[in-house]
Image (cartoon, rainbow, N blue to C red; front, top):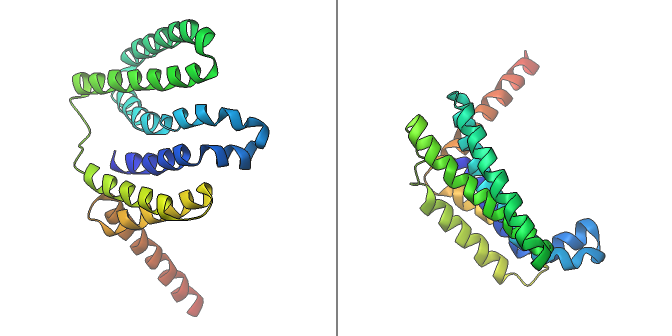
Length: 193
């Protein structure tokens, strides 16, 4: 859970911050008007990454019927919301209903995982993620460069802060560094033999 959440946060922040520039870089200026919808949809990974983990827990514990009920509920809410709001508010309403549907899915997933599996993700790593996110945002706002460049720089700072702070990312980074070092040492030893 910690790694999934830690991965979703900088993606959400960077996309929300640099939506206009991201669209210009990937699709050209003619889609600039869609930046508002992309700013809304930037929060989708944050919800979907965590929700996807919950769905996998339900699949692994053989609660496919529960997932089917959740899926049908989400589909019903999403289609109804789209039918009501898109004609009135356009494509931005579609972005909002997507986020609302994913949030609804997350809530249903949390309830189902708690009831069926007896598990809820721990939130003890949230302060580290929040600190890294604050550092990322500070860097993005302080740099006098294009927003996309600032978002990349902020993302680098985010990763560095999480590696320096105690917790899951630091532990994972140490394990990966140790495994990489052992692999390099074995290759070096076999090349020298």
